[in-house]
Image (cartoon, rainbow, N blue to C red; front, side, top):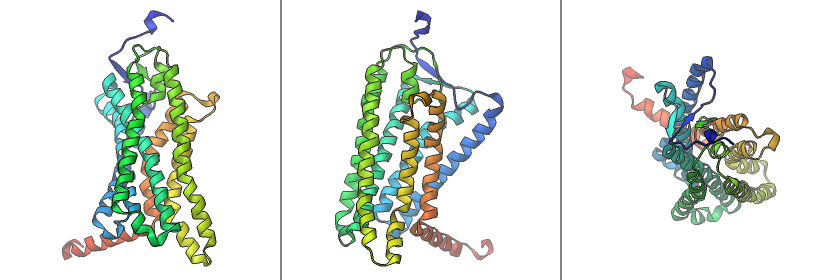
Length: 317
C-alpha cells in the first residue's frame, strides 16, 4: 500500500447517515423527532417511578436503570448528527472519538446485563413470590445494578486500549454516523488481528453469557406458569414479564443482525443501518413497550394525570 494511504491523523470526519444533499433535512428532522421521543418517553418513566410510591419495586428500579441507559446511548450517538447539521462541522478529534466509542460500547454491555438482572427479578417474582421482598431487597438490587454498570465499563476498556494504539489510518473519513468499533478497525492500516480476535471473543461472550442468563429463568417461569391451575393466574403471571421479554427479544434480534451476520452481508452500509435501529429505534421503543403493555405504568400515569388536573385552578381546567 502506498505511503500516502497510510495517514497519521489527529481528527476524523464523520460521514453521517447519508451524504445525499436532498436527504439532509429529512434525516435531521427524523433523528430529532426520534431523539425527542426517546428523551421524553424515558424521562416520563424515570419521573413516574420517582413520584409514584406504588412503583417503588425492584422491577421499576431496574427499569429506571434501563431508561438512563437509553437516554445516554441515544445522546452519545445521535447528538453528532444534530450538531453537525446545525454547525456544518463533521470533524471529531481522535480523543473524542475514542471517548464516544468507549461510552457507547459500555452502555450496550450495561444494557444487556441490566436486562439479565431484570430477568432474575421476574424469576423470583413468579417462581418464589413469598420470599420476593426478602430476596430482592434494596441492597441486593443496588448491588446488582452497580455490578452491571461496573462490568459494562470494565469490559469495554481492552477494546479502547488496543484501538488507541493504532498509529495510521487509510482515510480520515469514517463511514458511520458516530465512532463505532467496527468501522474504525476496518479503517486502520495497522495490524488489527488482535482487535478482531478480541471483538470476536467479547462479542461471543456478550451474545451468549447474558443471553443464557437472561433466558434460563424463563424456562423456570414457563414451568411455573404451566403448573398454575386457573387461567387467570396464568395470564397474570405471563403478563408481568411480557414487557421485559419483548424488550429482550427486540434488543437481541437487533444485535444479532448487526454483529453476527454472514460475511457476505457484512458491509459498512448494512452495519450503519442496523446501528441506527439499535441506537435510535430501540431506546425509543422501550418506554413505549413498558407503558403500553404494563398495567402498573398505565395506572400510575392515570393517577398522576388525575392529580394534576384536580390541582389546576378552575379557570385552567
